[in-house]
Length: 183
Image (cartoon, rainbow, N blue to C red; front, side):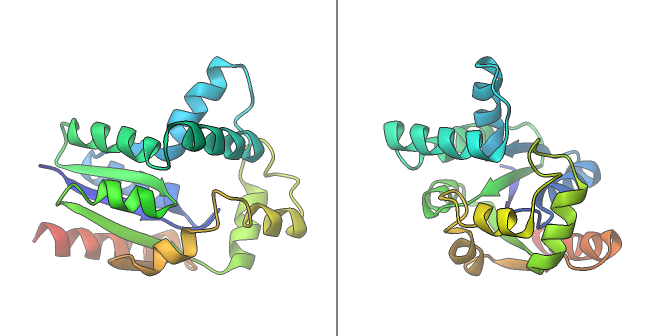
C-alpha cells in the first residue's frame, strides 16, 4: 500500500507547491479534490473560477452526499501504482473520515499568514478570477462554504508546516515529514 499524504490549508497557503514538491521528489501520483470539479466544468465549457467550483461542489455534495468526492479520491488512491500518493484540497470532515479508511493516510496542514496568502493569490493565475482580487474579495472567498471547515480540519492534522518563508524552508519541512514516515 502507498504512503498517502493529504494536504489541507486555506486558499493560497501553498498546498499545490507542497504537492508538486512531493510529486517531483517521490514520483508520487497526485489527486486533487477540485480536479473532478474542473473536469465537469470543462465539459460544460465553464471557467473553473472559485464561484463555479464552489457552486458545483455544493450541488454535487448535496445530490450525492458530503463524501462523494472523497470516495472518488479514495478509489484513485487505492488504485495508485506509486509508493507515495499526494491528495490536495482536503476541506471537510467527510474527506478525513473517508480518506482515513486507508491506514497509510497522513494529514499535513499547510499554514501561512493571511496577508502573505493575499499577496500570493494576486500574483498567481491559478484561478481566472484571482489576479484582480481585492483584500475584501479575498476575505469573502475565505468565508465560502468550501472553506469554512478548513481551520478545524487543519487543527487535527498530524503534521503542521509553516509556509510563511522560502520554498527551501517549505521543502525542508516536507523532507523531514517524508523521512519520519518512510523511516
